[in-house]
Picture 1: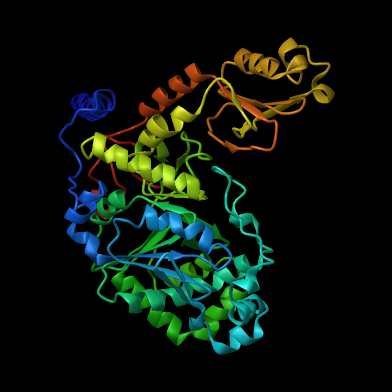
Picture 2: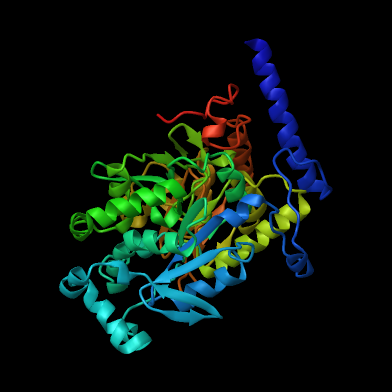
Length: 470
């Protein structure tokens, strides 16, 4: 047992040492994971794409809506979809954006439901008046890493209509490319790491029925969260399509009584006995700006593993992540990109001792003159007075990593988050940068040597404690 422990530590040391050397020397190193090469056309544009036979067997489906398509789609056409050979754009209105066709997918809902259900009043407006029919609908484009995303806008007509797209888009995606081995579904504010996705899917048998996604529950239905992205194999697609066709009324009634369509899709897959393969931490429901890098779910540390998707990502952030990912693979000789790399090499550079007009989401405790005027600790009594006093409070508490000051209120946090810009507000944020560095180093100590949570890797990581769901 002692020998195995030593061997695991040695392998882990070698893997992370290669990554570190590449980071600081910018020199090439052999890949322990997989190799990429550019196609001739994209190489001329200096675009780094994976060379994989699997790429031609994948259809990526991006789901959007008329209220947001022109604001959120163009960045994907310039970035995340550049390397994808086959993709489809589904919405609630036929239109063309930057030379690409966007298809109305809601024709797949029964005539009766479209004529009778109140959610489709907005759909009728769109089809009678085009984009003019959506002018009274606010577009919710996330701020930089905003955690106040679309999922809170449940009264928005476009949001209500969105739940009806999930089931008919299965049929239309299958008709688009019936020979695809994998169908990948994302949203307009989802960032997709195409390179890592192909490596991940290579660990599954495409001849079997697979439903892959970030797990979420509504009552007793487990489903893959749509914003984080989810994947269906070809056999699973066929089962869903046939089951829905034979039970159309039943599933439309189910959709009526639920507030999200990804749950309705999960119900169909449950009925055809295709369980969800949990894709955490590779698929994420938040952006790097709002994620806690220390999060642990189903016995898996986010920090340690490769990243595939992020959600609630603004167009600006999508562009930044694309540029970062491109640089990563060019500069680090194909070393697989992990969440730790995103935080160390991309997020970390954005923080500092003082950042104005920025909310870093410090919410563990708030200090103000009214509630803390009689505190026996000087730092707590005076924290509300200024940014400097707020920093002094954080510094006095050994577990405090970051803080923010806003109009006589000081907030602190023992966990790390980047947060997002507030250009029109006077909130100011700061991080204890030495403690952040120590915190990040401590997260490395949790990691084993496993990369992917796929069937091909089950039972192959005796050195890692992060292998099984709770």
